[in-house]
Each structure stands twice: as C-alpha cells, then as structure tokens.
Length: 287
Image (cartoon, rainbow, N blue to C red):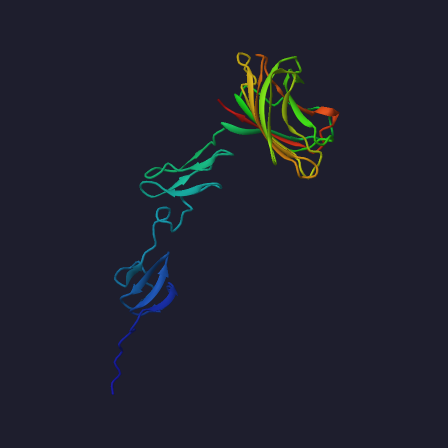
C-alpha cells in the first residue's frame, strides 16, 4: 500500500532559527524575540522571508509596552510609569522627597514633605541635677513649640514638680511673673490649684521610682514674640514609688512679660534632684 506524506499534523517547535537547518511546513522557530511558522520547506531563508514564513507571535517595540524598558529608564533611581500615551520615565528626586500622585489623569511626581511640624531636638539628662534646663532650641523658623518629656523622676518621692520659663537662657523667678491654673486627678480624688502671680508654676506630683516615671507634654505659644506674652498648655502624669497613687494633671500658665522665652527649667520642691535618664523631644510648629 502506498504511503502518503501528510506532513506535520501539529506545530513542531524547533527552537531558535538556524540557517543550516532544513525546515518543514509547520515548524516553528524563534527569531529576534518573535516566533515564526514555516509555510514552505526551505533551508537558509530567514524567518522574515514571507514566502517561507508567517509571523506567529511578534515581539513588542522596546520601551513602549513593557518588553524592554531599558531604553526608557536609564539611571539608578528612575521610576517607570504610564503617561497619557505610553511608558514614561520619572527621574530620581531630591533626597528626602516623597512620591506624590496627581490623581486620575495626572502623572506622579516627587514632592517635599511639609515642614509645618518638625522634630528639631532630642536629648537625655546625663547626670542628676536640681534644676533641669532645656534651652536654646527655639528659633524664628517656628511660631509655637511642643515639648515631650519621659522617664522624669526625682529623688524626693511625693514632692511636687514645678517649672519656670527661661529668659536669656536662665530660669526666670521674678516675683508674680507667672499665673497658672491646674486640675489634678488622683486615683480616688482630685484637686485644683493655681495662682494669679507666682515665681513658678506647678506641674504635677513627683515619683522617685524609675518604674513609675512622670511623663509631660507642653505646648508653648509665641515664646520668642516680644509683642505677646507667652502661654503654655501642659498635660502631666505620674505615680508614687509604691504604684498606688496615680495622678494626672491638666493645666495652663502665662508668662506675664513680653520678654522672649528661650526654654524651660524643671525642678521639684524639697531640693531633690532630677534623676539622670530623663528624655526630651522638641517639635517646632509653623504659624
């Protein structure tokens, strides 16, 4: 019985095109990123010769559809995105900038973060002291300031922690220069305190235990503005050494002078020292 050559009954993958290979109909090869199917047996005819080959799948154009983006992003730090017509390059921004979206229909961009509320200083009390001065961190860049204090303890348990505002770098204890009011809540009761004129302002009751330190938060308004008096809001909390006498204080104070305030000094009554290790953070707030 005669044998009839039906040829391939399915595509036959032959790998990369080789000019020395004899290809039969329905052989498939790869060439320059595309694939081609043989439509006429031949040897030495490139896959781009349309009388012998048909395109089966075609490589994309570099840099426009994601096949090869090396021609679009060229520098370390570049980002690739799609603009209104195709792939596009966003070059690296300035150190510290963040990526910002423009929303629907807009391209992304680099932008500088807002500096309206910025950490400007931090420190730790290195050795015990009777008067802890935090000074010299205010500048004309910011209008108001927030100061956070943690791990604040003193050696005289149960005494009261007080504060003074600094002028010219030193605590100001001028008679009647402070007016303040405060409300302290204890575990089972509360008390009010205040004065229309004093040499200091009261913050909260002290703990001498590192296990129960005080934490304070102050917000100073216009400390460097010599045409306005400086005011301060504060929140404080603490506990005695046994852990049984919790107190939390909310208060406010006005420095009754138009002198620039350069910082704060913290101390306790009874002459006890502030224990080393207390930490502060200062943030500047633009007006």
